Length: 541
Image (cartoon, rainbow, N blue to C red; front, side, top):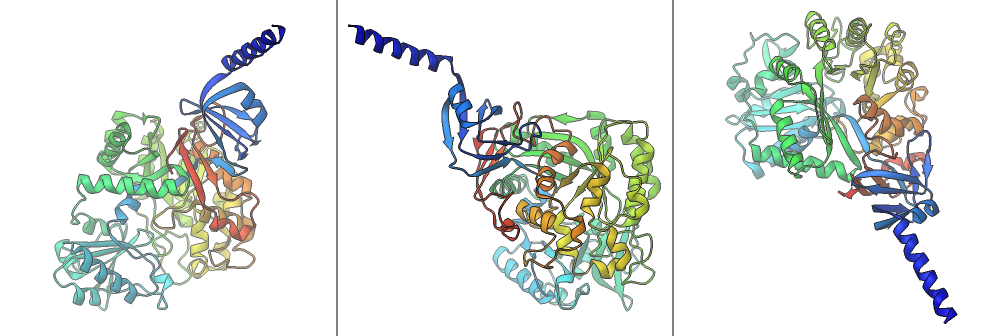
């Protein structure tokens, strides 16, 4: 009888202990967790309830304290916070899946061959595509339209350079856009050769072509967004900063997210179009758990690869050529003053040292009595010593490490041996501002955040070149790089209290990796694969 009583007491005790445990949705154990939380940087386990991290600690602590509907034993795999791409073109990547892909082409002939094959398969009324880069060809010069004209005399063709700042079009497209040798457009170039149009347009003149390209249908837009989401989740990206969208696309994204047809979190920069600016300044900042509309994307200049970036002194490889500002200085200052009076961020594309000078000095002037505005310089690619001296922590440098390793083959030809020292200087930018937000600028570069990580840390391309790293003094540590892709990127979006680290109260966005990104051999970083991606505690990949 006594024996039965003892067993009964033990059973009651076990039941009581189970009832004392807090019920949660998911308990992750046996993990190598890099939390990116300064207070608790490493952990073994964490608990998720209602889409947020409830507790972070050791296996024993959390197993004793919580009863989970699901327990995930990751058997020692590395876990990092959901990765954030601080500068990309998410919607553009999705649309690119429906166009001719010219990334990686090694000659103009290969470009033409891909267009021909695409048109045979798709038979579209207006051929568009993106991804060519003349710097990757044996003949490193802009192409001309003659072969396009002969292959496509009756179908308009417009294919965009990899950086989005130059375009080659055929005569049919020029005719439809009413572009002649006498057409003039400020903020860019329409290239001529021997008095004739070459078909190459740089920066603002491209808008004349874009205005005649048939707009994607709603069905195509939705498919583009869904296609991009699948790609991003496969690389562990849970938040993306799309650098330039229209109100219509932003509204579509919001509706799809609310219907649970699109789940990725987005920080959407509104394109700098006067009616868009007016609309959102009147509407105000818009924020949900998945969408953040609180900034405008402005272009100061073009790109270095197409010699559209604005330099203080002429290009080293083109006499008397300084590039061109996309927006006039007066217009830029006027817009900056207007936005400074609003709660919105100003995020400005600035590549050349002249453009960066205008942006950094204007930001400092209009924000001098305003704290914690976090206005962003997108790219900050070439910065002169005098601008480095006036950087401060009221500004965010949003940079893309793979640009350095893509451009290093020719950037010194554009800039010369002195200016190149102030280019792609991520460590120096970090030292001056305290944080850098890291992104890819895809589809200009590859989507993979592991390529970003490798370029930041090793300063090498995927061929492991150069052996010692390109301007290695500006490499970031692995810890700095991980922060740049998580908590600092979240900070650049005013979202550091909601995401960017595995911390109590934040969204349960995390990634399980096949390898330990913080310890694997440096040259193995680009080969790291994502095992699983979680958003709000739910598996999305």
